Image (cartoon, rainbow, N blue to C red; front, side, top):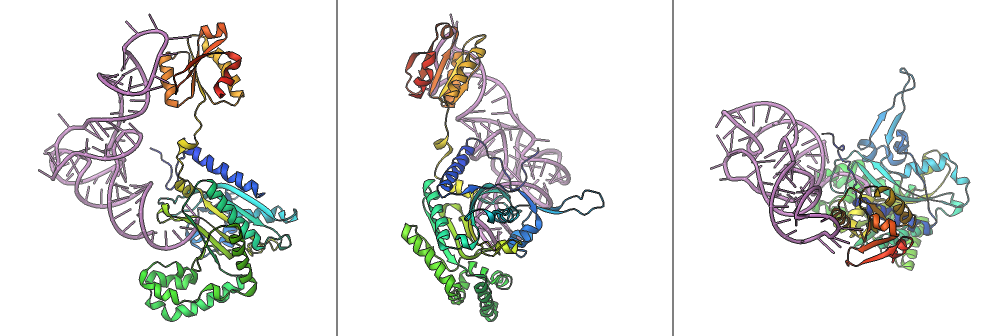
Length: 425
RNA sequence: GUGGGAGUAGCUCAACUGGCAGAGCACCGGACUGUGGCUCCGACGGUUGCGGGUUCGAUUCCCGUCUCCCACCCCA
């Protein structure tokens, strides 16, 4: 039997109703902050991710679906393509390519769509997964660098989670410094680790060499005392960076968004600078990050664009749906009315009635003239329809229909032109 | 990529130390004419994930493989 490929899955009704509910809530909240949707290709030039996410990151080094495309002629070399493992790179590429900096103010863009990473699947981790993300990017003169933008993004996220009824989340906040700070800090960290890393767990030692920042993610209990003594990024922030971070926190306090400072929070993608954050949730197992993001002031230039500081985030929609208390039934709109045609020739008559009711924005399910009335009732009940409309020759000849409320059992006679009103009541 | 657990009907699960693969729920039909839910009766439903091996005989034991789950790695 042919099956969905590893790490991918079908989203079926009624669960898709929950997904649509989440999408709609996100679009609604984003609109209030004047964000607009961008749709970028799922397929991009491999080099885009190598230059933005970073060659040395796990995502690029070993988790991408990438292949060499065929050239136009058999002899011609093809282009290396990749399925996008995240969407920020694509958005910034589009910002540059379409000269969006020529538009007034900052660009506030959001996206909803599938991303691909060739990882080992697990709960809350799929090879095709879905992200809802947003970016603020633009010239510094338009205010893209302002801590007000960082705070606006974080406050918007808190609003969205509240709106979805998700409780028990925690906002973890840190500043990982400007590019220069990071370079100095990395060096200091390397030196500090050089003498003591032998005492650490092998896995943590490996990190000390490949990516010193990642040492802070080490969970081995015995190594914690060593990690505690390492220099912190907060000691290396230069004055402007420190000020920036302080202002982000001030605004958050002002608008009442709770956060926890976590100076061990580091983010994996190379392009991050200054503000870094994660929202975590308890009910997700090992994959406890429901969303993550941060500032990426140098990304546009790294991709050959103009200076364009930016900040953004990505929500793992699969994980968001998992942490959502709502079941599909809570958001499922069931049929307002089930129309039961009775007898030969009635299909063509009820089709017109259904059309009339649907144009009044009612959800209508249509039976078939071959069904016995009893069967129609059974189906209508199972579908959870509010009403059943009995439509036989009598009804069409008199113009008065039998409308029965399936929950209360109350049945009334209703003239055809009052049906919609009676059902909506 | 590493380590561990699990795959039996649409779903949730049984099947003793190897001996004819079952139940509940769901689905479909019926309990006579244009009135559902409850109840009763009946039918349908299987390459026991897939491929090898051992055996008179394998859902059961062994090997391989695929998928999911848990942890690691990493991340959303």
